[in-house]
Length: 288
Image (cartoon, rainbow, N blue to C red; front, side, top):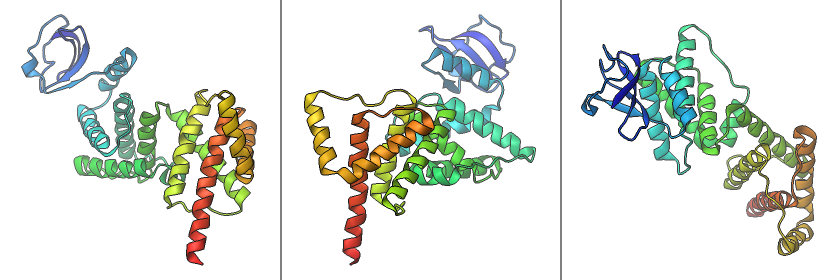
């Protein structure tokens, strides 16, 4: 490995035999090293590499700004998160989560704590990610002895969802707000509150999550050909009540976010709305 840049006494930026840039760490690894020198791989304790050139640059910049133990802890957290989810995670999660955790620890030392106005929504719409956020807080406490604000679990959850959906944080807030608005429209339309503990509600929220992502990334489902149109017409005629609700959600998206929904998106919304309404009717029949 050839030294490209000395970050500090324990961290180097190097170039390997395949001409890949790596961040390598080890006790005293950077002491009295200079660019151009070669180091033996056996001296390296940990290696970090991003596939994307921009992400690798961001990692190099971040690792020069935060304690190495914060990066190491974050990598362990991500390894655990990966073991608990089947969703592929964007590699940038290491950068964004390490930056967040390090900043949160520093803010805690300074007596500054943030509260997340969307915490309740995040707990409801992303329960699996929120539980992972809580696990991360526990791990941080056990490793550092620092008790972070419980709201940090919701911030960490959003970072995880970002990595699942390949979005950034500002878009993730918009996605969460759109989910909240679409649910409000549907609950007003049906004049009832959905059971947030039900499997059908979870499925509906997952649909809304990807629905919102497509809207903000300009990747909404395109309308198909004549065969698809026959299917759409069948859904419109067989589920007029639920299709009307989907149209109201479309109006909300148009008026609030200035985005138009395709007929295909409206049809899939209709199908999910029918499903969640059917589960309510079934529950009522069982109670009676």
